[in-house]
Length: 384
Image 1 (cartoon, helix red, strand yellow):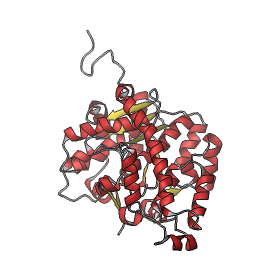
Image 2 (image 1 turned 135 degrees about the vertical axis):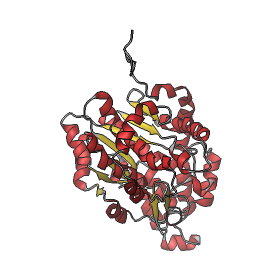
Image 3 (image 1 turned 120 degrees about the horizontal axis):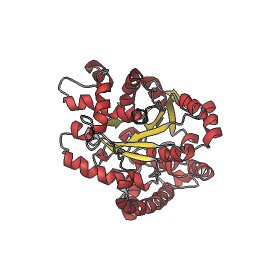
Image 4 (image 1 turned 60 degrees about the vertical axis):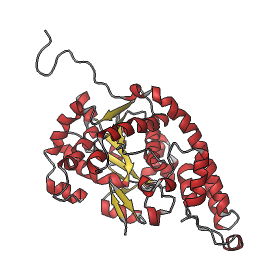
């Protein structure tokens, strides 16, 4: 059984079926050619890792007319960051650079507090700080990146959130998220807060600005609801672009996607050292190889189900090298252990640089936190 919700993904995901069920549009060759002409083409697009969208053509239309869009994505802090979390952020970083646009990055630190009984606000506050380091380490432009923390920026966001909430009925929330009458009312209200960054820059600048939201497809229900409401407030319906999941080490059929809930042994975190990465991949990465070396040499392996190869499609940027790896593994020239060794080297090389930048990020958080311009008057009285 396959489950895809904002809080859980399980089973073998059929992305063709997802496109139909979620009502998103496939990113076709015509749209790819248009993106390439404007900004080049990230390998995530070439490899169908970002595979679907809503109204991406509208955002490109506006961009070509000189009405520059902004980006919005985020992270609900509930634990340490793992490699699966990085996929939409890496692409968002490319979008920021390629289109020279601003990014609003939301840390909804109340979400997992509301949805997970075991988490306290002190927990999510600690994870928010920790997760920020991973986002900063990816190299987002501090002059064009604005961090929003829901509990810290509530004075800025709540006024807009209640405008959204007024247009969302409980029946709509139940249909979109599977809520029951036992759901706490904070969780029911939460999606209104998540909608705010999709139009907040338009409010602050007092003009309508297009928004593009990159995210993994499991987060789509929040934004389906938001897209219906935001035009009623007088703003552009936010566009979106969705990516596939990085498979769990156990393979898509068992894990659905990489998740901390699968256990530390089956999850690679951004803070794992080289020895830990080697152990996890060597022991837990599902193999598409044959049972013996002799069989593998004769019949070859199956890269389409092999987790090490699947991960290389996310982290190996060289198209020709990836193509050769596929051929060598399928024909039996490359053994499963050798393929795992390739992945281990690739991941550890990536993490070595990431962890260095992550440590340096501890002194940079203030550069990214959104700060409101000082106003001459308060809300209730004029300055004397």
